[in-house]
Length: 388
Image 1 (cartoon, rainbow, N blue to C red):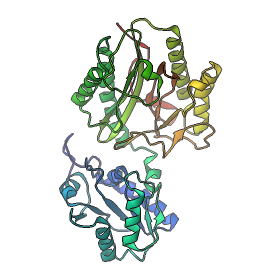
Image 2: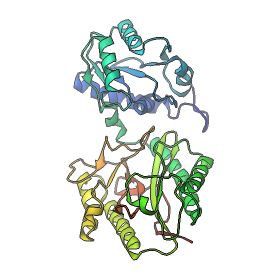
Image 3: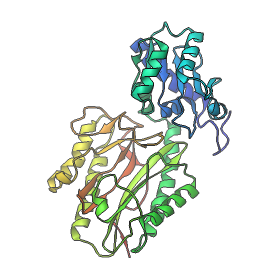
Image 4: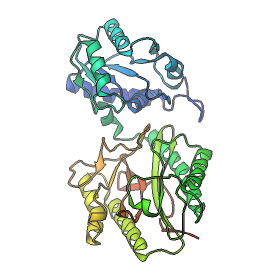
C-alpha cells in the first residue's frame, strides 16, 4: 500500500523501513539473537508502519535475521495491518482463540522454537500475568530483547525530522488558541477545548500524552491538568501540549498569568528561559547529556531555586502512542549522564519551577541536534503571556 497523501497509508518509503530493519538485525546478530519478538506497539509501528487505535490488543512482530517479518494480530486488526504497513505475512488470531497458543502455532510452523528467541520484556503493553501465560504456552526461555529497536529510534531520519516539523505547526496553533482564550471566569475545560480544536483543525492526530493545562494553585503541582477549575484573576496558567503528525509529536510548554501577578512569577519564569537558553547554547554533537543538564541546572542553582526544580532537563521525543510522547527511556538529558549527543537526535526540553501548591511556571521547545549545534523546531513567543 503506497502513501495516500496525508491520508491513511504507509508513512515512509520501503527504503526507510529496510534501513530500520537492517539496524535491528545488526544488533540481533551482535547479541546472538535469531528471532526477536517485538511487543511494544510504537516499535511495531516504527518498523512496519502498522498503525491502530487498538493498542491494548495483543500483537507480536517477529523479526528474523533474514526474510520478511511476520505480524501476529487480532483478526479485527488484520485489514488495517495490510493498509498501514508493508507486512505481507499477517497472521490473525480470533477472539475465541488463545493469543499465546496462536503465538506458539506460528513459531512451530516457522521452526523458531529451537532458535535463540528474544522478547521485549520492557513493553508497556505486556503485564506480568500476560508474560507468564506467553512463556507457559511457548515452553522456552526467552532472552530479553528490550532496547534493540529503541537503539535505532535514537537518531531520526530526515523524513522523521520533517514529520516533527509538521507536528510543531499543529502544536503552535493549539498554544496560540489556548493563550488567546484565557480569561477570568472561563473553566480550564473551555480553554483546552479551544486548544484541541485548533490542533485537530490544523491537521493533528490524537495526542500521545494528555495535554497539560493547569491553573492557579494546581499549576504548582507537577502533572496536574484540566478538570473544570474556573479561572480567576492573578492565576498562573501552565500549558504543555503536543500536536501529532503520523504519530510524531513536537511538544511545547509555555506559561501565562491572568491580570496582575506576583513579581516572583515573572522572576521564576525568566530563570526558566535563561536556563533553557543556556542548555541549547551547549548542545552540539560530542557534548554529553550531563553537560547539557549542567548548563540548565547551574542557572537554576545560582538563582537559588534548585529545590523548585529537582528533575532532568529534557528527554528524547519522536514517534509515540499513549500514554506518553516521550522517549526518555531511550535517552534523556540528566545530571552526570555520560552519553554523547549525536546529530539528528531530538529532545523535548522543559525547565520548570514550582512553588508547590501555589503556582508553577515553565518553558519548553522541541530541539534537534544538528551537525554544528542545534535547531529549535517549535516556534512560539517565549515571553510570559499576560491575559487580561
